[in-house]
Length: 172
Image (cartoon, rainbow, N blue to C red; front, side):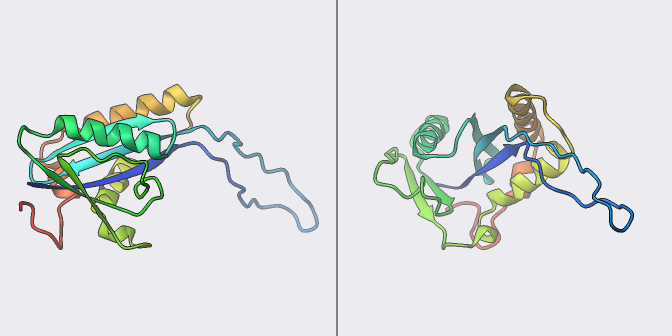
């Protein structure tokens, strides 16, 4: 039995309005980036083995979650069962989702992202690899998401450190 955590994060470009200085009584122009291209990084982490499984997918829905669970299932060692902690996103809690036999899903209480250690991994990836960037198109976003993931996986001890459970033991 292994304890895992799972989550997904949006990576992409979305413009926002900003403030600018101007003389009183004038209305300056404030150009913004209005592109909305994005993708989703679905990730699952096992701190005990310092490993993870991820897919970069175009949407966050039940179909994409099904692909992710199938990938996690195939990456588990033989005769290993994974208990996966995850939030209550609607695509995690639907009868349409077919959970593989070697996986058990553990839902966290609503509105409690701080309980999911996967959030710390996303923060690390965004702070170190996926921030302060303007991507030209979706393929650039996907390339950077894959590069960030591959760097994370190659850093020995990073997942164990970032996704260490504070309220659960590393091994069951």
